[in-house]
Image 1 (cartoon, rainbow, N blue to C red):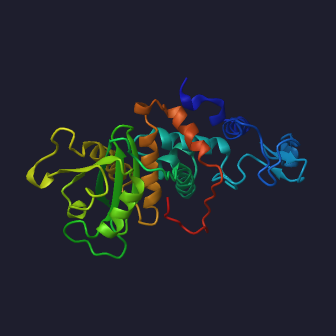
Image 2: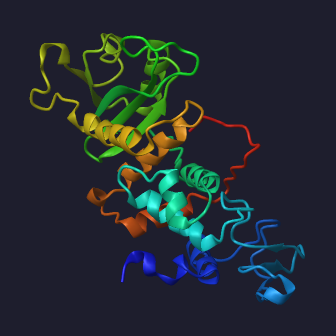
Length: 310
C-alpha cells in the first residue's frame, strides 16, 4: 500500500471528511456568520444533486462546505483529485509540473495548471517576524532566473529576474523575495526589515552589500568569490547557495519556463518545502497537511488581480 492508496485520495466523500478534520480540527464554524453550534450536515443525495460535504447553519440559514473561502472554492475538479495535487506538489523536492499533473490526475492541462497555482497560493506563508537574533547567522544571496518581459537578451544578468534569499543558519529557515531590480535601494530595506539586529550576516562580495550591513548588524562576513574563496571558518554562504541549487534545478529541470507574473508563487513553493523538510522532522504527509491549513481565507480566480506581495 502506498500513501496515494488512502481513501481520501480516491473517494470524494472521504476527501471532504479528511479536509474537515484538518481545517475544522478545533470545531466546525459557519464561514458566513461565524456560527459554531447550530450546524447540521445535509445528507448527500445524487438524485437531488445534493453535494458531498454540505452543511447548513441554523443561525443564518445558509449552506456551505469546508471549501468556502478557500483556494478550493468553486473548483469543478473532485476534491479527492485536488488533495492528490496538494500531496504531489508538496512531496516532490524539485516540483511537479502542470503537464505531470495533467497526466497523473487525468484532467486537462489548463485545469492542472490552475490547480497548481491554487496550491502555490496556499503555500505562501507571509511570515513577518525577523530571522536570526541572539548572535545567530543569516546568510544572504541573490540569484537570477528566466527572462524579464520586454528586455533584450544580453550578456550577464541584466535581462534575467532576480530573486533574493535569506537563510537562518541555526534554524535552517529560508525567506525569499522576487526583486524588480538587484540594487541597494531594493535589497537593503528588505534585509533590514527581515533580519534581527542581533545577528551576524554573511554575504558574497557583491557591491550591493559593501559597507552597508556592518553598521546595522552585529557583524558582516564576506566571502570573496572573485578570488576563488568559498569559505573560511564560519564565514561562508554555502547554506543559502544550497537552497538556491534546489530552486534552480527545479525551475530549470521541472518547470523550465516561468513568467515574471507568476514567479513569486514558484518562489513560495520552494520556500515552503525547504522550511518544512525532513531535516525539520516534517515528512511528506505532514507537509501536505501544513499546506492544507494554508488554504484558509484565500481565494484565487482567473479574474483576480495578481498580487506579488508576500
